[in-house]
Image 1 (tube, rainbow, N blue to C red):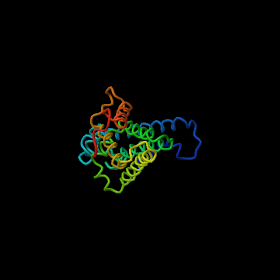
Image 2: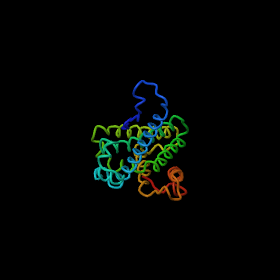
Image 3: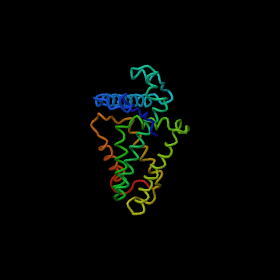
Image 4: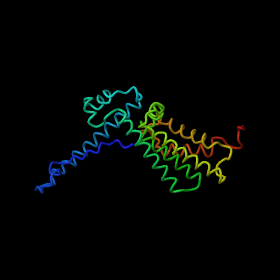
Length: 233
């Protein structure tokens, strides 16, 4: 999933074996050049991600990405070999971060309700840094997954689903969660409720992602009505 170019920015003095004096200045310039290139690449990914989220991946052209960045289309290929490489970086970064948080939560352990709360909080936290990626996943998942380079999308989704379902099943086995709910359906309902938040949640607003997670967990675990159950299947 790593599509980074790995440019080194080495100076001429780094390429031969001579002991030139001074040698530190060229290497410093090389490091600065590499840092600027990396920063520029990150800016391009961010701009492209926003366009993919707004227009859809298929409808967004390389020219539009270049225009948004204020560069020529040909200059974009200095950083990426294709539009697919850009969305690859957008999605892999999101899934790497999300799965990293989920794995850390599971490894830390805890009671079922506490652990499910950690997963919910991690999912909501991803809204701020990865809102564009989440939108792309919702809108372009079926299109992208048909290509071999995006095979990791299915693999990541399977691992994510397994993590959530294991926590729910463990909670059922320990009497923390109701035994009559379907773990897979429950996971999907929670996931989709969190995902759709990207369409109305505003990071600059009064609510943080932790606030959203806390409110959702209150509704999920405690419900919105008092007294006996008002619905019987």
